[in-house]
Image 1 (cartoon, rainbow, N blue to C red):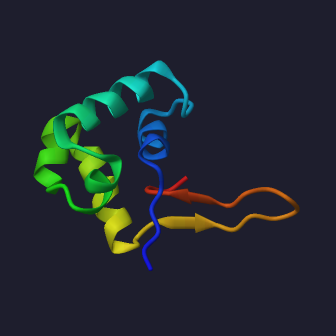
Image 2: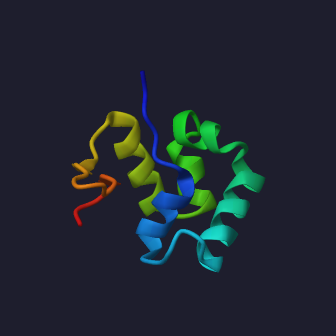
Length: 88
């Protein structure tokens, strides 16, 4: 079984903004238009294509996600856990 982080959450982390920000929405729609579905981007799209469509940093984040090399923080007392692609 594989687990993924939603693409808007990854974009928000990289941009340092909220998940519903205009910057995230623009990038998300741009990526879908250039590369295809979110699941395809997260699981199969060539990293070079992702880097060209958005940024090398996004390609690195998705590479880490695919390898399971992410930072996990467990939830507690009714708070959700967090998964980060990079330290933080």
